[in-house]
Image 1 (tube, rainbow, N blue to C red):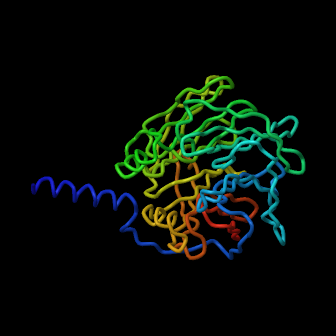
Image 2 (cartoon, helix red, strand yellow):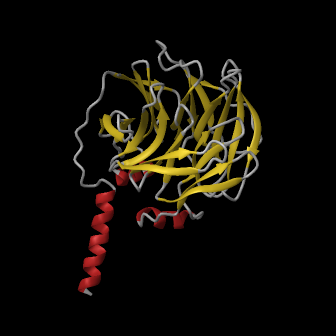
Image 3 (cartoon, rainbow, N blue to C red):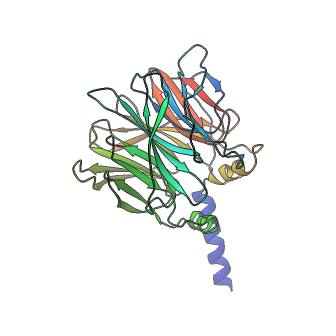
Length: 341
C-alpha cells in the first residue's frame, strides 16, 4: 500500500510539475499594447501576401451552441483597426481552428487552408481561394479517417499540406486520459493531393505546424510534450526527418514564421490554469510568446518576448511579428492584442 501511495503521489506531482503549476512567473512585455476588438477566439492568425493584413480564425469556444465561426480580415497596424468578416455563406457547420495561407509566388494568388470541426468527432480541411479584397470563396472540403483530432495545418502548395492530430483517441473522455497521462498518441500527417499518410508519430498533443520560408524545414510543437521539433523536409515526397528537438518547458501552441525566418510561438506556461479558464471566463490563464531562431551552428535558441499573468490577455495561442509590431491571438477572448516591439 505504501508503495502504491508513494507511486501515485509521485505521478500527481510529476503531472503538476509538467503543467507548470509550481512555476513562478515574472510578467514582462516588449512595449505598449492595445486591444483590437471584435474577434472572438482568434486562435490562429496568418499574414497575407501584402504584409499589412492578417486573416484570423475565429470560433466562440465558450459558447458551444454557436454553430458558425468565421474567418476575419484586419489590418493590425492601422490607426483604427476594423475586423471584417470574409467567410462566404456555407451550407455546413464551420468552426475554424488552425489556418495556413499559401501564396503562389508567380501569380500572387492566395489559398487558405482551414481546420474545421463540424462536431466533436467530425473534422475536415476546408479550402478557400482569397480574393484581392480578402473575401473567401470555398473551393473544396477534404475529409479522411486520418483526421482524428486535427489542430493545425501548414500548406506547401495549392494542393498539399501537413496536419497535426493533437490526440490519437477520438472520444472526449479518452482524450482527458490522454492529456493527463501525457500519452504519446498524436501525430503529423501529410496530404499529397490525393491522400493522407503519417509522417511523424508519438507526439504529446501535436499542436502548431509551419514551414520555413524556403520550404526545406517543417516545425511542430507539442503542448504537453513541451517541445519544438525541427524536421528536414523532402519536397518530392513530403517525408520528414527529425533534425532537432528543443525542450521549451512550457505548453507550446501555434507557430508563425516571420519574414526574417524566426519562429514566433504562443504558449501556455500553466496548463491547469488554461483548463480552468476554458471552463470559466472569470478565471485567468497566463499568456506567453516565445521567439526561436537558428544560431550560427544551426541549432535553435529560445527567447521569451512576452509573459502576462492573464490580466491583459489570457491563454495566448498564437503570435505574429512584423515591422516592429507583435500581434497575439487568444483561444477564447473576444479581442487580439497588438504590442509595440
